Length: 287
Image (cartoon, rainbow, N blue to C red; front, side, top):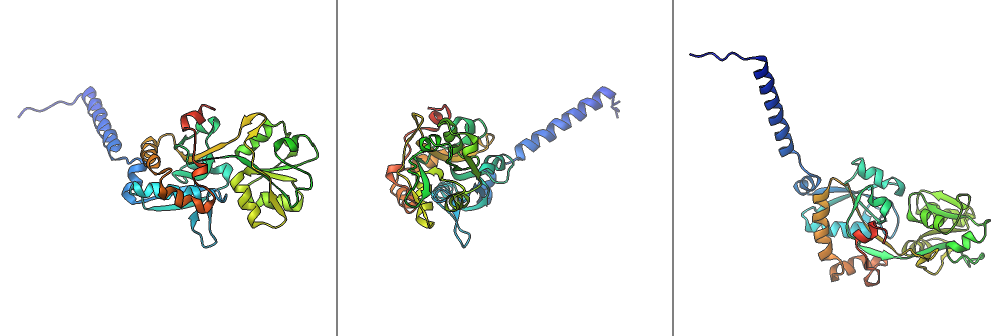
């Protein structure tokens, strides 16, 4: 019987081969987020308690335009259970990237800065802006220009939201801004006089005004400093989850504008008048 004499070079080569085999088997066995969610029938989404875009009911049910659309689309993909992770708006992108949840379902506006950090689905709606002001609007506030023209006025905005950028574009100084974490804080600031107005999307402001005492909504507007502020909201995904994004987009495109979609979102104030008219590629390019 012939004996093999193992040299140091042969042993090193064998070790490298085994390491490659182990690495290959790991790659083969690793599941993508989509594969895991379809196998489990379960996924987590982040939301920011901003009605009517995404919020929790008193009994803990996740609802709103964004969660209801995401649930309908994911169900078509075989993912039946969707759990919400309540997160401050400004922490949604960091939370997604850190793996606290796998999709942002908060009606988040698509813009170039955010597109650099995460991927977005195609938009599910398009909408303008409005202001929340004290009942009777005693200071005659109409839009961002009203705040800029009177340095004594204070504007409440939600940290991390696009309204911070709109205020800057309008020439409003940081000293005039009151940065707050959520909708209830915005309402409280206007009610207490801490802020003279609060800025958000027209639907959010209308919803807030309908539920709170002593406040009202201004007429919606679509421009700030000569630029369109009709925002388009979509769903956020990690850059590495391209297969999940592609599968989601394929179903979303079939769903948007269908009778089922319109019936689902009308209770939240959305409908045919709020369907998007831009693509994610255009929005990420700043068009």
